[in-house]
Every structure is written in C-alpha cells, then in structure tokens.
Amino acid sequence: MTAAQNRCVECDDIIANPVCPNCLAAQMMVMVGEYDQNLVNCVKGISIEGDITCIICNERMGLCAHCFSKDIYCILSEKNQKISKEFLQRFDFDLRKELI
Image (cartoon, rainbow, N blue to C red; front, side, top):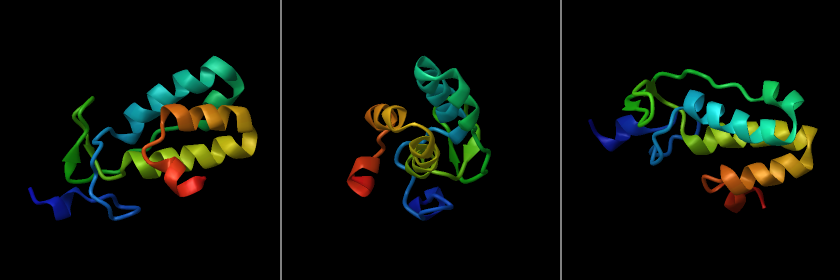
C-alpha cells in the first residue's frame, strides 16, 4: 500500500493518525457529555471507507482525524464556546494551528 492510497478524502493529506470517525466520535461523546448531555447528540461518527485501517476497530477508513475533529469543533463552537475550547484541548489534531 502506498502513501498516496492513505490520503484523506476531504483534505487529501496522508492519514497520520489512523483512528476512524466512529471511534473518535465515541471518545468525543464522552467528553461532551461531561459538560452537556444535550450536546452529545451533535457528535455523530461517519463511515467513509478508504485504504487505511483504524487502529482501534480495524474498519477501513478514508477521513482523517483532523478533518473529522474540525467538523465536530465547528458544530460545537456554534452551540457552546466553553465546550468547544475544551474540545480543542482534547482533540486538537493540529486544529489550533488552523483555527486560532
């Protein structure tokens, strides 16, 4: 498998942190739930098949942690700034370089 096949379908960067959106969403839901149970419904995983395997669940994936986290961050920042700031602390994946 070549690096070209291990690229994110959204940003086209190489997937360096191979954790799928569904596994990330499960972790994100726990974090969000610590602050606001109503916002947990805003965090949903997605299955986008690709050429790399998630290191947690072994499912094939094609969306990088950065792009998925950015999407969830944008949703949370519209709903609750305090939670979105804590989210960046826990699920950065280089988001702060891009957003701040």
